[in-house]
Image (cartoon, rainbow, N blue to C red; front, side):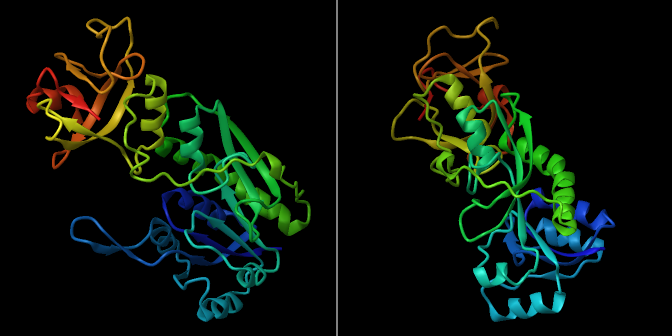
Length: 322
């Protein structure tokens, strides 16, 4: 029996799963639900979501109706979907929509539940310094990521990945598991394992203010913060290139790492936020040992190697970040 599947998703991380369902003979993807085209770039040109672009390439009908609209329930009825997959869609699905698909809606979530329920699980796992994380497939209900789990995978973290790299890995490695899990729902062999709700931890969305580099933290904590916020919303700090408190621009930190104490010329003492530039390196003081800045983007400028930026930035000896 081929399952008629409705797929709901919007960003890049949902595309590997859409392609996996479309390529599997156990499924017929009868429609794709995604967010409407949104303005992007300097010209604010309306641009299709990555999922919409992939669906059109695959020849799958695309719908952008809001789930709470009457038109959407009509769309669901016309599609006659047996089961639905939802991943990073971006809209809450009301109960009448959840109930309208006979076998239910299932989400691929990028953590091992009940840890890191919510909007930013991969980011929070990195920021917390977790040794492992993973991806789970669960049945969607009215609560926040609290439905029974039907499939799970766990991976080890290297301690150097950014959230973008981690999400890309989980999206690709989780897609085959997602397809197999929903096929088991269809043939009646899936096992539904309730979550231990008392152990839940929440991964709240990371705001731009959250991404403001906390220069007084330890170098390890700052390193995790930067990697968790890369590429979105992007770590940043106020640069006082002249050392004057009332003169600053925004400096985005794209890539950094704890300085190697064995490396030549690493400053032994540097106040939190203080900057020191060498010929090939730029260091920032923290609440512990220095952080080496590797790639930055100054306000109004292009991204570049930190050492190249520093040569043209005319940093005073008293320059600092806060």
